[in-house]
Image (tube, rainbow over all chains, first blue to last red; front, side, top):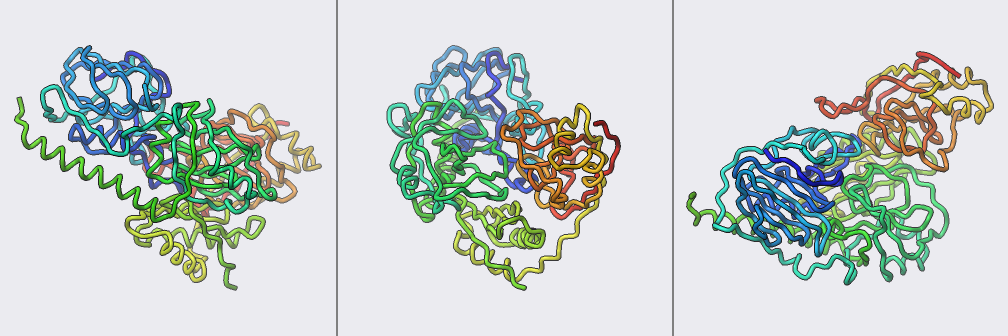
Amino acid sequence: MIEILTTGLPNTVQDLGRPGHLALGVSHGGAMDRQALAIANLMLGNDPRAAGIEVALYPFRLRVDRDTAVAITGADCAVSVGGRPCPPWWATTIYAGETLLVEAPRVGARSYIAFAGGLDLPVVIGSRATDVKGGFGGLAGRGLSRGDRLALNSAECTLPAGGFGAALEERRGTTDGLAAAVDLRVLPAAEFDAFTSQAQAAFTGSEWSITNDANRMGYRLFGETLSLVSPLELLSHGIVPGTIQVPPSGQPIIQLADANTCGGYPKIATVIEADLWRLAQAPVGARLRFLPVSTQTSTEALRTILKRRHDFVAARNLMAGRLRPA
Amino acid sequence: MAAKAPRISLAGSCALLLDGAQGTFSDATQELVWAVANAALTLEGVREAVPGMNNLLVLFDPLATDAHRISEQLKSLWAGVDAHTVAGTHHTIPVSYGGARGEDLAGWAAHCGMSVDETVRRHAAATYTVAAIGAMPGFPYLSGLDPRLAWARRGTPRLKVAEGAVIIGGAQAGIMPMTAPSGWHIIGHTDVKLFKAEAELPVLLGPGDKIRFTIAGMEA
């Protein structure tokens, strides 16, 4: 069992979400930074789809009532386990009665906490992820509150003394967009050609900032006004996370994990799936730049992410084979 | 008659949007959308097929297929598939019109230039078709609204419209499956539940289903 000691409602139980149900109006949901949660689970020998906690509001504290193992990934935060400082992207043992503390990020926005065996919660529509909009999944379909208690599945997890860390190539030198803009690769979307040439040039040639209106459903951006050549009336259509819509205000909205499954605004572009984690880690105020790429590039980027996960499993298995249970 | 070729565009690295709309919404085009959606699910590498209003979003695994191949396959399905393949279920939805849970009823009747009784009678006289499910879990986009009952959406959406609200948005009718923001007008309320997350089949309605509203009560 774990008990939540300090939290805010934006902190939720997440796994890799419930893709496959858009035609029922059910969002993909799941971790905004899927790779970070998947790697945290793999560090503990879990299925990458096991449920953990997504932290977006800090500080976050929890206590465990039995010995177990945790892995903390995602944003670069000061983390301590039983008072022992813990580097970013680290897996370690936590003993009964000890507290895990995750402080506000130095870089990034969202942290992921995985537990050996994963959180023991019912599967609703194929996932344990919290869908706050629909009020289901996770813990009673809501964000975590102080005093909440969550059960853990039992699992064997042997870690090296002091734990171990993961370092991913693509996270090296990551900024949070406050020092330098975050580059997001995009593909043009259905209405790209319906925008004025000035709007098309401004979209990729200028910087955008993330406004306060930013959550798991989407981020509203601020920047130059993007205009259509002439007004468009579109019928409602399905959208995917990463879709960049332009409402009549001319200020873009990026739809994300918990977005409505259908929209009606013109779409200028879509952030490629392999770069959605960069958005998950970009806080309010961060600056963004959009870089057009080809479908070949977007597919290669996806292949690289999956290969990284595969290589990580191989490396962890190799390490586990050399460890002897205490 | 062969359907006009649809517009197909990228929707990110793992999806395509097929748009078959020719101006306003067409029921015949929508039947084609449902049929192509069902057929698309059998294509190699396709993960999801999501009917919208006269359009279809198709999600695929770009490591198993590619956008060009899916695009060609969708074009040939659009040109060749039998559109009359979806047999929907019939549903009857009892509605309490007006009152505190149908606060826009009087304004709607005034907008339509009819008495409240006549407006309600016409709403309950039509047979509606579930064109698509989307936006939120279980929300039906209903076609078949009497054109005289159409009412453009509110300028400012309400932050909360209650589960069970029977609503009108432009030329479309709908029912709220959960409490959520909406810019549609609220004309009544039903106790029929459209979404139950824990149920084996969480969503009551599906594309192609037919709906009749019955008058369970009316309060001006």
